[in-house]
Image (tube, rainbow, N blue to C red):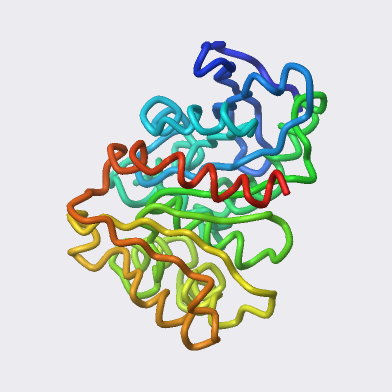
Amino acid sequence: MSVTTQATIASFGGKLLKLAHNASTTGCEMKFNLYLPPQAATNKVPLLIWLSGLTCTGDNCSEKGFFQHGASKRGIAVLYPDTSPRGIGIKGEDDAYDFGTGAGFYVDASADPWSKNYNMYSYITDELPKTVFEAFKDQIDSSKVSISGHSMGGHGALSLYLKNPGKYKSVSAFAPIANPLKCPWGEKAFKGYFGDDWQKLGAQHDSTELLKQWKGGPLDILIDVGTGDNFYKQGQLLPENFIAAAKEIGQENGVHVRFQPDYDHSYYTMATFSDDHIDHAAKYLLA
């Protein structure tokens, strides 16, 4: 699976690469960004995968999240994937911001017509990392990978981590959709991608439900939620449900939800606390 480089941009002493490849899981060209810190010029570095939210591409966080700042200091590469297939031509895929294009929800769809291309779970957990590890085998240590994300991508990061114990060294999230079965965004997405089985299949990707079933060791999850976030106020994020699930299984000391006064849902919030999330990943990636 060859990767083409569309741009190379100097950033915080390293290089931000704008890349593309033809993905078999989604049946289309997928674009993504990869930040290589200055340390990658001489040594293999660990990788943090960043999952973006609704309407976003791989560009949003790499341009506005300032993760490269902390990543350069700690010597960590950052992978910024896209959020869905693009230009598939499915009727209705561009009708709404919260379903279809830009809203893959990091699941493998089982309902027609979405099941052929909307396979973002397999793309993120398998195809994309393999592609990156092969193309950058001299720069990236494939044995050290962490994951983080925002909003829909926060849902993705938490659910992928909890669904695949041991695959990722750490996880963190900004304003995650923490209980998608119980909020309008998640219900719409799961009904569309899973059809009649949406509640059963959705539970397999709902972070709060997955946390209740956690059989791994002690957790150390960092989550930031702004109290000025309108989507939090509207009940789309439901971090309290995630906190309650942690208490239910005796992991309340391993789920650290920081409610940040007045901060909103935007990249201003992520830029403010991005170094904290890089440091959280570094505890495990550099151990």
